[in-house]
Length: 254
Image (cartoon, rainbow, N blue to C red):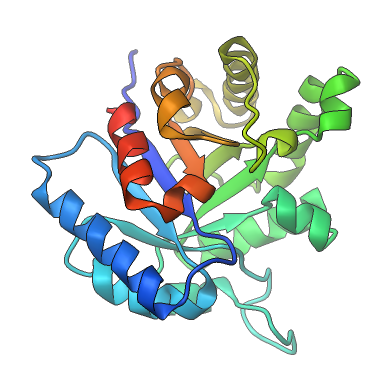
């Protein structure tokens, strides 16, 4: 059975954007998607928490999805500075990124913690975008396969499906550095992820679940990366802050 997965282009704005420029960017992307004749891709924007409601309002009449950059595993409680998945859903989000390497490194998040967050996202009705990927030292040490397989197995909660989960492979050493793996390397890791998903979820579900690539994705390399069989879109960082670049990447996926 041949399955066609609709590309997803997700923009992670990280800790960037004030109300003026963030709103202008969201409005411009909403205008472009509205002017497009039935685009063959889905767009997702994940702004900082302070902009979620403003950006959500700007996207309200468009098909662009809104997401958070993180969530806590608990539904509520004494967790100063954290945001729950239920709060994101209440603010209009449909997706949330969990397990980004910057969270894993800066906040010592473990695979178990990422798994709990992904489970909380599902419980709140959100799609969890689960990030996995190796460091430069792990890549140079020949550990890519082992690390990616371990993170996927330990971060993916039971009950994951193509409807409630997206996987994003982001080699840590490629994020924001301008460096990207070769297409052969990307293809090999994505094939590994697809195979492991098939063992865990079954062939049919694994064939439908979207696996994104992230790490210095830009207009110049997007088409080549997203032409690969098991690459179903991109998780875009810096380039998602520029309408022309983000739109060009999205168009490269169609």
